[in-house]
Length: 114
Length: 111
Image (cartoon, rainbow over all chains, first blue to last red; front, top):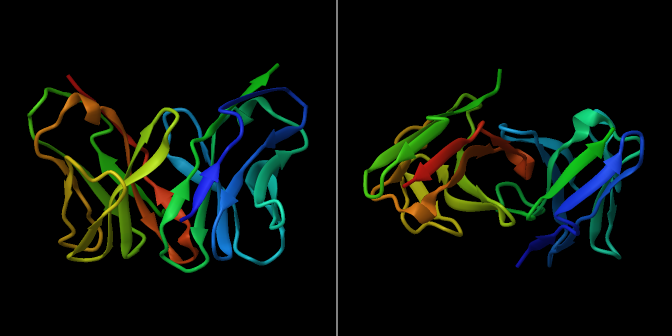
């Protein structure tokens, strides 16, 4: 069975500092991996997605994530935090076949301190 | 514009009073689902539908019903709501490659 863990339910960074949100997954088959962002009072929207092409995936708003099979990780990074990055971030995993169930992690709330 | 639209966005109801949350999509996706979001638990799938007239239970189906009579609509029905169903609900579609497209969410409070 697949699962996702996100280390740290709350992360605070200073504006301009590096953002690092951690995600580890378990999957018995090559996975699809996702990061979603949820701004206050909104639905979730896709930040980026890994589907077995390049291991370094670039997303919207300057975010990127690296798939590391040996570490079963898919950490999300952004070189310089912006106030507008404050949101809830969810990592998710599915098997690498279309229309497979997607499993979400518990989420990490990112605060950006001016 | 590709959209998943759900209504109502906010609802306070009383225990036992049946309610329906509607969901409609314009992306022509066959796969639709309902999730609930609770603090510390992430999103949990309630029900999903891979096609018209085909529905199946997700992880937390108890107390909920769904129907899929046409491709674009997938309503969520709470026949007899209870306080433990107070939550934030999302309707979603899932496209090829498993990308999920979410509605804006429906805040439901059961008192």
